[in-house]
Each structure stands twice: as C-alpha cells, then as structure tokens.
Image (cartoon, rainbow, N blue to C red; front, side):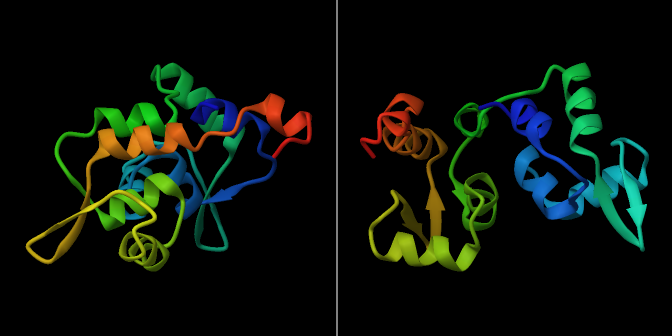
Length: 139
C-alpha cells in the first residue's frame, strides 16, 4: 500500500511523528518544513497536526506515493537505527533488541548498528502477507 493510499483511508488529524514516519523523514525536519510553509498543516493547542486527506493531495501534486520498500531501495549506503526505526514504524529500542537477537539483518560498524536498505527491503518483501491468505484464514 502506498503512502497516499494509507493517508486516504485515515480519519482525523495525525500528529507530526506519525506523518514523519509515513513520509520517511524525521519529525524535526517536518517541523521545519511546516514552519517554512512548505507542507500543509494545522496548529491545534500549540501542536503540529496534519490532515491526511490534504497531505495525500499535496503528495499527489509532488508525484510521491512510494511504499516503504521503494523508499528503502532509494537510500544510498548503510542507514542508522533512527532512520530504520522510522521506516519500520517501531521504537529504536525494539529495533536494537531485534538486531541483537538476530531477528533482523544488520551490520555492526565501529560499534554502531547499521542496516543495508536493499537487504532490509528484501527482508520486508519476504515477510509480506498477501491479502488472499488473510481472507482464507490461512495465516
């Protein structure tokens, strides 16, 4: 499911962290773009909020709507835990635990955990569950 498709089925305003995760960026960068007026947003009780429907239309105008796998494959070089956690939508601590347990492919480079985006994209693809298997109850 593309980012645009995900956004179109969402209801209500979403917070900056969720929007950043969907867009494959950092929350701080999203705040800067909003402050500069480069991304449509609202301020609700001092908090940055985004309307998924408006965000989807904004992305369509920018010809963006890639899946996590597509975005991962565009990354160059190894990526760090913070960026990988954003892509996978999980907390950094959980990602560290999964790497340590050998549940996710990773490298240790100078004492730092790093991920190869191409290998990670393939790893995700290997774990994708088709809709037909869910409908048939064979999960």
